[in-house]
Image 1 (tube, rainbow, N blue to C red):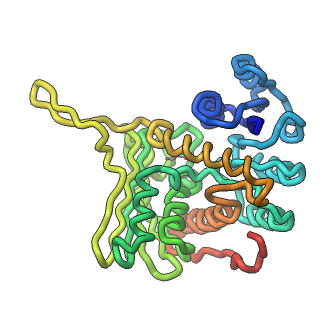
Image 2: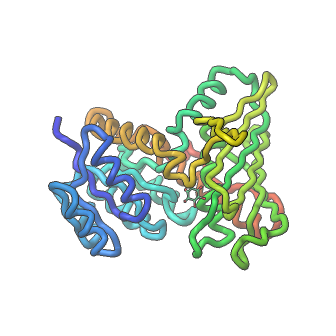
Image 3: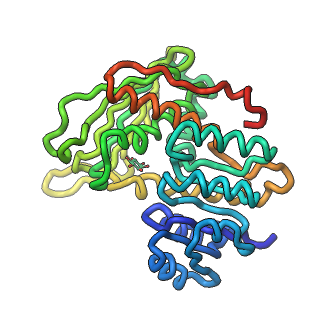
Length: 343
Ligand code: ISE
């Protein structure tokens, strides 16, 4: 079978990282087209990859006959149009979060894909592929903690870009815990509350950082999340689940513990999500490539979170942003999945 020919749209930090991994560590695929709104960036990158071209218009890149599948790492506001083009041309797509930037358009994408009768869209919630999260999921599914009741999460970044505002802490950062909650507990989140403690003196003016989020799931499980994205320290993502038969924790950063003179003990923490989750991204992309290559037979070109998961995340984050304004718990408004056959 010949290599899957991939177009990577958006070659900023995440897209460029995917181009590098497909070129070096992913089997059965190669990048044939790159695109970016900064045309020279795409052209420079294409020049370093044998058999790769830069195409200036993202919709032309999707339609190109040299492209079998698409990785979308473009800014969120462009996703709706680009996803619709992927559906129109029948091209499988791995879409970095968010699916789209609002709930209504995310739902529209879910419906349009369902009408096609093929699963073409996978959403890039990479934590599901992290070995520690996968082990925690297996433990829960095996009943190893009995009935899970409570989850505590920590989500800290050393720094965020200057354009990051308080609602992005919900839509860009908390969204991962939204997906982790739905993944681990296999149920929807029914309400969200955002609590705003005193802002850190180190946070940029106007940024409400840290934030505390509280989710209640459909069956009444409690999840709390500490979000602190300007710690100046490193990338820290920890998760602890407590059940009626014990508890389990991941994300302790205990890779290599070193003892050295004079009397020092300790290890290192990854600086950002790229280093913390590199293997999860590799596994995610390899499994997606394998699923796309097998998709012709099954009509399912995904192996991981799908458009519905992107829609559910958008709905929870919209409730989260509303709660950020009121400080009160906000009910999540979602249509029932079984009202959209094939979703
Ligand atoms: C970023 O977009 C990510 O996806 C990271 O995983 C998250 O930790 C960070 O806060 C986001 O800005």
